[in-house]
Image (tube, rainbow, N blue to C red; front, side):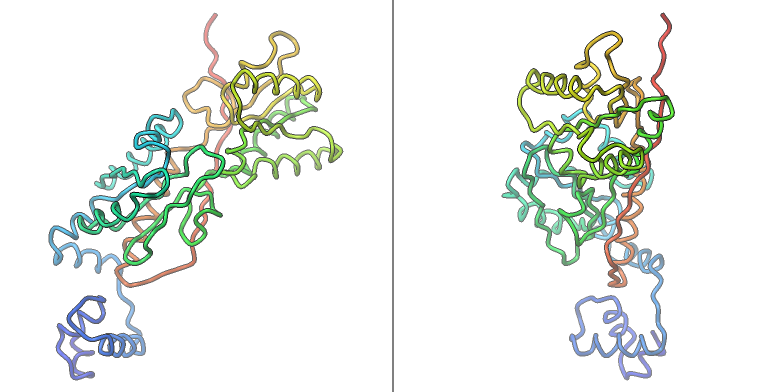
Length: 335
């Protein structure tokens, strides 16, 4: 900075303010300093900038590095933590943050995003710039949370088409289905079905359906045979009736599903198909462990990277990170 200041006829403080993007110098001076620094090959170190920011900006810097926000627009303020799956999901994300000494604040922006502006004003006033955007609520037509891009670092959990401009961490839905299919085929099953709720199909970008049709084709199944069942709402009694009719007509000997009720819906005895479920961690059932712990750690690493990159005004194309799952067998209990 001393060299740049001498070459440009400016004070060291002016050069520091210009390179840091802070107030106190004109826009023309800022651009002049940055252009000259770039020509000299200047490349700021994100880690050192983070340390300097922490030391010189007092309480606001401390808040920025020690606290982030998780925003959601589910139908009610506590709905996301009341859901059995998403309470686990949130717990793993919170643990990953705690390992870094970071606290996650959960904020509801309203079911129609009516509180979004107020929430972002609150975050700015408190010096919080790192933000996670939770997956949308379990509705057929969810809304994206409107985000002011300026001075906010964002990591989302998809769906990818809902937040195309931001980093996204998602489960590897496509590969997870292929893992389940391969295991069931090795066990001798020839008619494998797929069942999921309509809102789950939308949220996964229909990756399960795509992988299912690919595996069917590779197995030599005609395109019009063994069509997946997409349940579009209704009561559980109605869904069970639809499932049993689909199971009977398709003569399936195995089923892959994202719905935990499916094993209980199947008829008892010899006609009950073998079932593989998604997200079976700790359930005692067989299927895919979605690797929630890895999801939380990856999302936290990515957001922390964005916080560091923001110090040097660096932007990149959004990352798409897909977390792989793994097959687990059912826990056998003694008779």
